[in-house]
Amino acid sequence: MATDIGFIGVGKMGFGMAGNIRKKMPATATLHIYDVNRAACHEFVQKFSALGPIEIRKTSKEVAARSKTVLSMVPMDAHARTVYLDGKNGVIGAPVDSDRLILECSTISVTATKEIGAEIIKSGIGHYVDTPVSGGVTGAEAGTLAFFCGAPGDDPLVTRIRDVVSWMAKAERINFCGGLGTGLVSKIVNNYMGLTNIAVAAQGMAFGLRYGMDPKTLYKCIKGSSGDSWAMDNAQPAPSIHANSPSSNGFQPGFATHLCIKDLSLGIKAAQEVGIDASLGETAVKLFEKANQDPRTGGLDCTSIWLHINDQVAAFAESQNS
Ligand code: NAD
Image 1: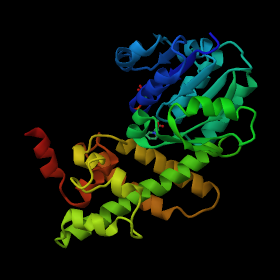
Image 2: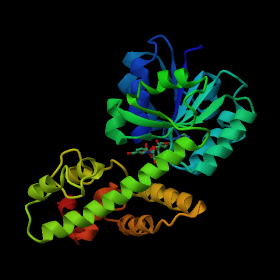
Image 3: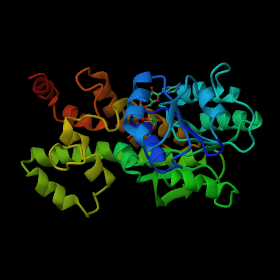
Image 4: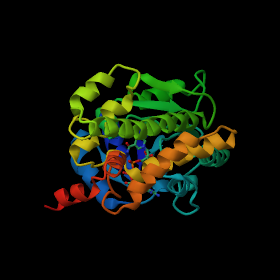
């Protein structure tokens, strides 16, 4: 059907994003979903099928074949290449359709999205646009994400892209950044700055508290002052200061440390490719790698670097086992 939509990758982010699509797309149109994790698909159907038809498909190709608009939200370059370019099961095997809109929302490299986009466009499978997001799992669930779209503001597809994306985003946070790949350039710059800020906030809060300051008083001093940042609320590394932060919820992700390392590494590589020194990011990524290599914090949110900076890993692990 002309209004059917496909969503590939219903993980932590995709689940909420696709859920908002199901809530706001025409009630009679079908949402086709696919994830290599079948359990995630079944959980999605259980949660949202009262809102309208949802079909679990066996491959990305099947999703695309049945959809006029396709979205994807998978972890890294390799996963996105499989979703789109796999000769047997990828989107590239779907029937040619010059009217199909493809919005690739994952945070992957600029090089990968340009390669995938060029192949998909050349094969006539659809209009491919990189549309990465910011705002985390909370924003995905609430439909308040920011979108960075790799299309110019005067592109003939702007209205169509905006119509779909606005089901998952705040209207004023939908950005049209330029040509193919510019959505990801914007996203990678954003994450380079945001994730480095988390590391800086963790070190600053840690030494402030070690001087004996009351955590909430220190937070209040910095809020609205020059050291303030998005991280101070949404990824506050010190536990029990801000309810929104994973650190106040046993460091459950949120934004897993391995994805944080991936995004910082994308930023470092992108900076180096154009001759910009990325030493602050290189220092931050070393801190996150330390947390990720420790089995006691490996699967946790990236704010768990707090435990390493403060030598609190053993006590934390014990509290989780008791
Ligand atoms: P996730 O691992 O929770 O979800 C990814 C999903 O993709 C999983 O369910 C996985 O099974 C599925 N998948 C992997 N390969 C697949 C394939 N070949 N075909 C179909 N499904 C496949 O990760 P996430 O946290 O949802 O992140 C997804 C993307 O969004 C990443 O690129 C991440 O950097 C980006 N992102 C995450 C956040 C966040 O806060 N978690 C915020 C903004 C952007």
